Image 1 (cartoon, rainbow, N blue to C red):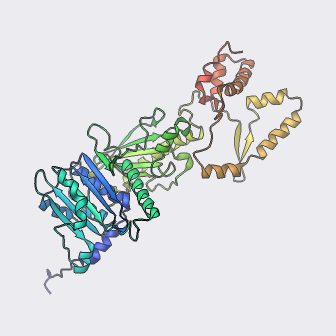
Image 2 (cartoon, rainbow, N blue to C red):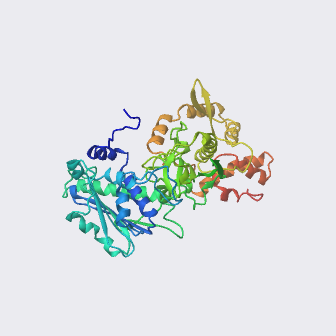
Image 3 (cartoon, one colour):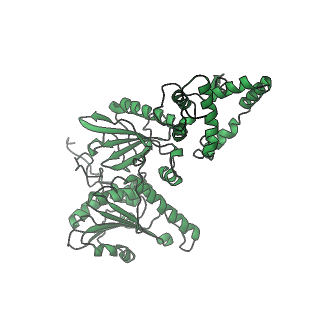
Length: 495
């Protein structure tokens, strides 16, 4: 047999196209892939439209990008239209040449794309999985069915652009009844999930002088900034510029404000699509498009309640897709081995700062004094368990012990208090409602706070401290550093 002899074994169209539907997209990530295409095509506006009709519901993505000619449209509908090894333009948000097709067909059985170049005729192509199944052939249809036309009409009002239409949404609305309120509400809930996901993924591209405007059923999307950069209490740690294969990779850690520094609306907004706990970790961006939203990137760290204020931005060029193992759905990344030590170091610093802010209920990252804070409760480790004792050296405890007429009764009371801390109830409450734990003196008026503060201030003054020294010592006694305005009123004239 000649050395260059071979068999040709093209894949069976019906089998391969069904397999390609299982790439791991969900509805939000699939639609994000389509918005990527619109932005790469120069769109300034993108409209997502969800039309409820039970099992006949449809979804359309329309943009005012530069559009495609017939030849370009056919190539765009080809599976694997671009090799992932070919260098891309810096602004290109794609990679594998599969996104339009695999993202769409993961959600529907009929994909129709209509497009036009500036002033040119409308061009239409359609993949129908039932046609492919019946013929076992890659038959790219030249027309839309009659039921699609009303959903494609908007493109005729634009000088250029593209419409992607999904019909037969078998993964979303199969067996759904048009008149069922339950089914309709479920559909509306999926729309809200898409809104939140796209607001997160494209938040940087939707801001600035060259912002892209994205609409869902004619409502503009609200960008979601994971780092709350405009908030005065957000702390930006030093930026770490790393280099890999001669390319700059910028890493910017943030520690978000403690919940006590946020309004209710800010707290709800900061939680993001999946909640505060889920959104801690690294945020990997490529050309301002968010790929990974809150993940510790395989460092073996679980999502921890005490660390949920730590969020770290990583900026990548699209030339590093292969090195970071960016997947087809653009939802997973794995850092190269050469960067892992640096990334771990940066993350450990951000985690430590975030834990400090969380633990001290919003206290400043830099204490006012180098002296250690004095707490009323002291954790003690014994036999692999943690116990909490009342600090008998706390100035107010010591003063009470020295001035009481019944020292034995006070000692017994202190012991009873530390032995009966409702730890189980606190643990359950913290787990069920982690963001609802009150801060010290929450709900108390300034008179009540000042009453306690004055008692301690007078104790320091009685021991020989000046007013300035007494204020400095108060800053080291938790939680008075949370009330700097009240501390400032204490001076030599304070009785």
